[in-house]
Image (cartoon, rainbow, N blue to C red):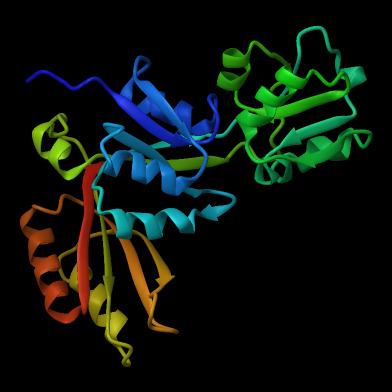
Length: 284
């Protein structure tokens, strides 16, 4: 079956960590659509301007990207793959600018906070928040401040022709972000994921229950009774119903396996709302 030309949207400027994740998920040659906001990423896929979208869903240090959980519910775009990307922060400047000249460092606030040991070592460096990691590299290459650098990925340095002054300056090397690859339902049906027979799978669902004693316990027990391993559970406010919640849950296995079908059927009987967000190969 002939593949449609890949056009992948992500949030951030060219060279963002989401672009690194896009390369891991779809290869080096996909055309990309950088978007300013996460909602724009989802909308570009839903409206047919992209064949896929790559979004971060959680970071091992910063936690979940709550906005994207809400968009997964609203846009109904299935998850077809995931990847885990180690976040390597680099100090990047214009070619010809030495480290001794740097006094200001621009980057996204999360990236700045993940490099606090580096800033403690070099107290002469002022942290300056910017809207995006890769965008900060683009800015210093365009505006050419002589005393400024940025913190971003190696890919950002390559794209904008910048120079890496210090590599891997993050305080915690166990810094990973989990990304989803989303498709339209039509694309996912036409182009099913091809995997090896021994591939391990993961399934993401969202559900709500009545706000009565024991309701969440009963909902989770449908998985325990079928020996399905839960990988994550996240709650989000249920709009229009103050103090009630949606539960986003990942379990190991395919949604169409016998055990999972029985569990989801049972959950559907006791939940007020249930939707499968996608089954996809588990990232290593």
